[in-house]
Length: 352
Picture 1 (cartoon, helix red, strand yellow):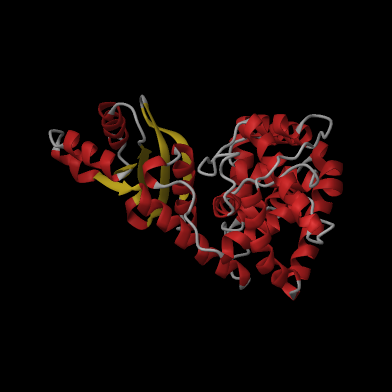
Picture 2 (tube, rainbow, N blue to C red; picture 1 turned 45 degrees about the vertical axis):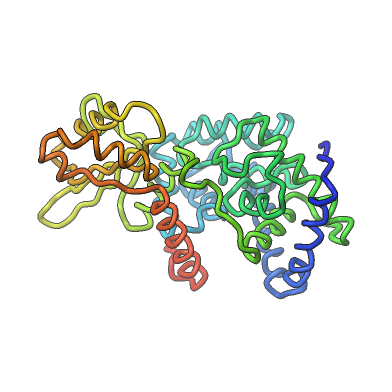
């Protein structure tokens, strides 16, 4: 794969952060991480290809458990079962078989899988591709995106994007090849793109920097999926793109069965642009369902003020059920819950 020519300043930024990375590379944690890396590569290159044609529910459980992207999920079996329910085991077998087909360009396989399979987002899909072909495929996740900003590499691929197109993923991989070359020059001869991901993770951890996706430029699908993740981490049965009433499909639903109350449902609509009247009408339709207790509009502060103003003339019963959640708060809650789950999982308390 052709690498991208980095500027002198970008090379210097990589060299500066290599000083910190060398300390990690000399640690016991690094050796443990490399062993973990080899086990994941072995699974996706050897074990999964042998099983994919007869993929079972147990295999899906194992696949999900192998992904770093699923670390925040304490109950990974719930996630695996949800993926099976949403897609069907036959479709999973077919699409995973195509994802494993290294004769097709990675960016083509990435784009198809993200489009066809629900429940495994860009971070999970690129992680699988990285294990399948670590020499040519990188991982597009929050930490990598933050590291690109810190290193001044955001001019090649927009680090605020949640989901890349096929051409953008190709460019991202070319960029990682350039970083790989710099790491090899610095003495890390084994620096494939999975190794580069370790480097980017350390950059994101050790250097203060802005989180991807400022509230004024948030990605609708990223916030939608984050709200789903927050719901699951809080113990709700959460899903996206759900029909909750006749003519009403909403972005996210949290459901829980609570004692004598029966089923309790919370509905979320993420609003970035478009008609506020349509948003409010959709939430009103959702509230007509007897199990829906709250409907929540999610957007930046400016849009939320407009939504509040437009809702003033609506029936009082609906307005009592309507809440407003700023995107910035959603991001902060998600980050705090992720940090909490990382600690719980590291203690071995979240695996069941």
